[in-house]
Amino acid sequence: MRLKSLIIAFAMALTTLAAMAVTPDKALAELKQRIAPDKRTAIWDVKATQQASKWVLTGTVGTQAQKKAIQAAMIKNGYSGYTDKITVLEDGIPAARKWAQVKLSIATLRTEPKHSAEIATQGIMGAPVKVLQKADDWYRVQMADDYIAYVPESSLSFKTESQMKAWRKAKRYIVTAYDSRLVTQAHGDETVSDLVMGNILEYKTEQGKWIKLATPDGRVGWVDAADVAELSQWSQQQFSAAQIEKTARRMMGSSYLWGGTSTKVTDCSGLTKVSYLSNGIILQRDASQQALTGKIMKKGTDWHQYETGDLLFFGNEKTGRVTHVGLYLRDGKYIHCSGQVKINSLDPTASDYPYLYSPLSASRIKGMVGTKGIVALRNHPWYF
Image 1 (spheres, rainbow, N blue to C red):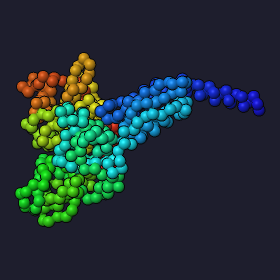
Image 2 (cartoon, rainbow, N blue to C red):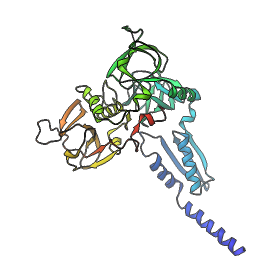
Image 3 (tube, rainbow, N blue to C red):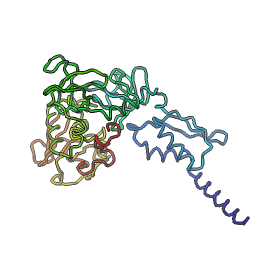
Image 4 (cartoon, one colour):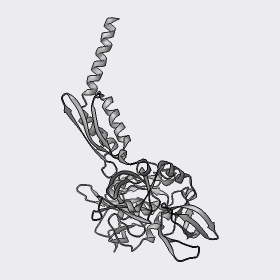
């Protein structure tokens, strides 16, 4: 029996040594690649150093879920006795401000907490955001598409977890018109707020063809019923390439804005996001992110095989870096935002064949909703 016990103990020791062959810095690198590979969608700056034969972890992550993943990885690799000095940004946010909603028809989010910083993206009224960090009168937030950026406090209406749960269960309406207005009285002309496609407001009552709605910060007004739809019903719509194309064409001629993701102004990936959101589908923010989703068709695919709604990706042919995206229509034509929203052709013999030439790849979203990076709004836990 004693020999058997020694053999078991030796085997356990070998197992521990094998696990510890993966150093903490390597374990962290592998974990980062798995759960936080993109700095646009995850905050992760963690280092492992050895001090007096003991490992010390320092740095910053965005969420408690990330920290728990680190703890599990350290234990799995035999480093349960390490010193934890990791800061979790969301822990610094009071309970009353863990969540927020965009309260303006369109809010601008930037790469740094200042108005002079580059525009990263836009948020639209009613969009829920998770608050990660306060920086003076700016907040670092995470959007429903996982994108992280800074937004002024003045653009947000803060919510508790219970308030967000109540909002998800409430009767809400989404703006389906290209643009509209919330006015002080039915048939009135005094504006409470401008509205754009995708804005979400809470239902109050109705009067004839007018519906009374409330913004996230409690402003109340009336909107023409023809401009909105009840959110829970609207979100049940099936994939419709026609709806996606219709929205994109409605934006024809509108100007380009780096970081734009609304019907007022947009960039190339903003156009595809807005078009798909009108069909109840949330895409990733940037073209290079969208190119990694859906059913991917590599360079060299005959454009005759593309279908309406497919995303076409352009960029550097030598490096494969994606810098632009367009939405395929039919007969070799695609719509995209380059200077302005316009239509060009993939056919080299066509008069509107542009400098972009052939795409590096294409992605089919049809049939892929629910896969990584493509979420039906009705299935997103922040909305329902």
